Length: 127
Ligand code: I3P
Image (cartoon, rainbow, N blue to C red; front, top):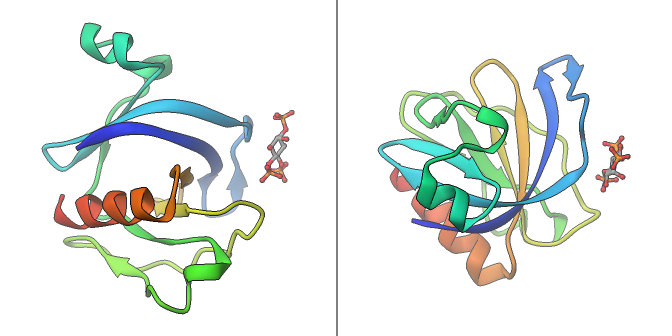
């Protein structure tokens, strides 16, 4: 599963904010239990990871809907082998997922619509 998401790296670890917290439009690929980010589809075709970031292994991560308006309907979902972390709710934008890594790092991922967000959530759960 793949497509464009708008990403914000909020935390490097549980108590350290990421240094660059700007929103970035990235081409995102879910494959083999990993998430990979690329600058765009051309970079993906060439296999050039965004800023040479290593793929994120999904087992051990947790993902939940960060946007306030859906959080009552969708509860945090544990991916295989992980514990669910409580992430602060993010209400500034809509269709936002929170992906929390085992060491406490967090990425917010904004999808283009509620349907798109639910598709990402679905495939992240399957990973
Ligand atoms: C960041 C940018 C983000 C903002 C973030 C800023 O500045 O404005 O949109 O996040 O706020 O630091 P820059 O682009 O100069 O790095 P929000 O959209 O969530 O407000 P933050 O410092 O509160 O994370």
